[in-house]
Image (cartoon, rainbow, N blue to C red):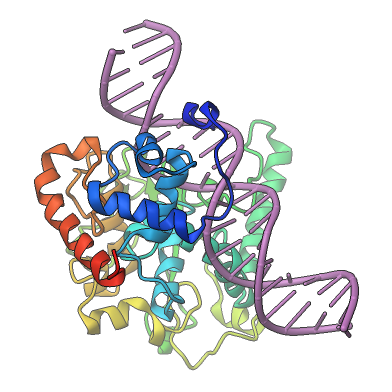
Amino acid sequence: MGRHSCCYKQKLRKGLWSPEEDEKLLRHITKYGHGCWSSVPKQAGLQRCGKSCRLRWINYLRPDLKRGTFSQEEENLIIELHAVLGNRWSQIAAQLPGRTDNEIKNLWNSCLKKKLRQRGIDPVTHKPLSLSNDLLNQNEASNSMSLKSESPKSDMEPSSSTFNFNHNKHILFPHTSTSSDLNFPLHMAYDIHQNHTLSTSSNQPLFDINSEYMMSSSILPPTIDVSSFASQSQFWEPNITHNSWGLPESDCIAASAKEQGKWGECDYVQNQNPILMLAALQYQTDSSLKPDALEPIPILPHNKKHQDEASQNSSMFSKDIQKLSEAFGHI
DNA sequence: AACTTCGTCAACCGCCATGTC
DNA sequence: AGACATGGCGGTTGACGAAGT
């Protein structure tokens, strides 16, 4: 497994792509599209496997890539999406036009995790580190009492603790709505059931996507004392309203995106409400998701699953080609 | 200047899901 | 139904350059 059969047939090149290879691949896809990836290297005259070509295209050659450093807004959005989705990089990337899952994953591992820790936030659980440690200790204690409990997961497994969409777990949203009530964060916990619906423990819908925040006091987790948290973290600025993950609200993606009219179709943005964003994402990740639902970046038109949409996508592909022509005028 | 450490990022690997025969 | 091919995803690795000693 792992290596596809095409990789064994001949000695294929590995490692970094040369400009010549890039040009061959670019030229080929510009002219013919990629079709079946496994046939691309042969048709394009490349000594690479199809998988490698696909990766190169998606992560580097695709014309709609944004490139450059991530903006503060993008970073904040990634953090917020990660809190909801965990390491589902492709789903996170789908919310960031022009960014690839690989890029976002790299950013998270090299930069954002560290930033969150510096702010006193556990990048795995997105809770204050002290609380995470308490919970971990509690977990370990209960594990020692009960051998059947799941073992603690690695650093890269946030979903197993609080954000597992496949099991009944609670999701915790410490939310500080204004600077004046900073010491009294609202807490909202949700059961996420296997059918991916959000509800209270009484199985009633916790909120309507169109409604304001809803809370269930009966299921509130232990309150986070933000003031004590602030004293632990030198990065916490008490005079600034922070969002749920300790980032200043002033540079929160939701606020600026609202101003800029980006993400306008997202209720979360319209309401600056992470709960609504979760609902939107829930909708998106729901198993009943239609191919054309909430798909900000229709990347390529050749997916067999989407043949019905081929004509629609082909026009977008044409735009891509145009961009390609602009970017690579010599082709 | 030489060496080491660290951070970043492109690319690969292994696995899973899905489609096809 | 099962084998195989392929696409896609997330984790990991290794090359490379910058910063530090």
